[in-house]
Amino acid sequence: MTLEQRENVLQSRKLRSRPWHTPPHPLGGAGDFHLTAACYEHKSIIGHTPERMDSFAEDLLASLEPCQIHAWCLLPNHYHVYITTSDLKQTLATLGRLHGRSSFTWNREEALRGRHIWHSIADRQIRNEAHGWATLNYLHHNPVRHGYVSKWQDWPWSSAREYLSHVGETEALKRWKTYPILDYGSGWDH
Image 1: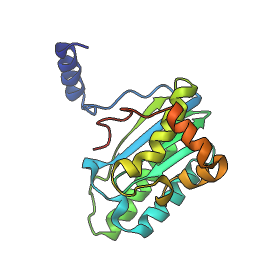
Image 2 (image 1 turned 45 degrees about the vertical axis):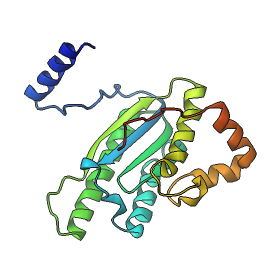
Image 3 (image 1 turned 90 degrees about the vertical axis):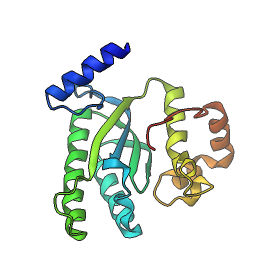
């Protein structure tokens, strides 16, 4: 899009009270998707305490039980999941309800009624096998990228340990080199 086209779309979204920069969601559909959800203004609300991180990780995974989860990673201010779903629209609705429940609970715990906790969920359909492996590598590398740990397996809130246990470090390294993340996700979750 040209600068003028982008400006027109932004103005149209503002006039219709739509989110300014939210990507469109496909209408329902089955497939492999990378979903990203962030706390409003990237505040570390999920990471308020390690216990909250533990509890939300359990709730997130339980909410995604109808899906096949390929990889997941929870950070203090956002999360990523790589899933196969038979109905994206239903999966997003389920996650929306999880966000609503967690917002209510966390605002009550911190006596901050009405605080905006979640930004919308961004979805990206996985295009091919290489994109899928790069996505898996990106998710597992995210805590390292953000400086929380120096090794994937040191981060307790992701599928990295299970993945490494399943495929072994040699195969994981081979996949890391074959499907590098390069600039994958550059500028997404800062």
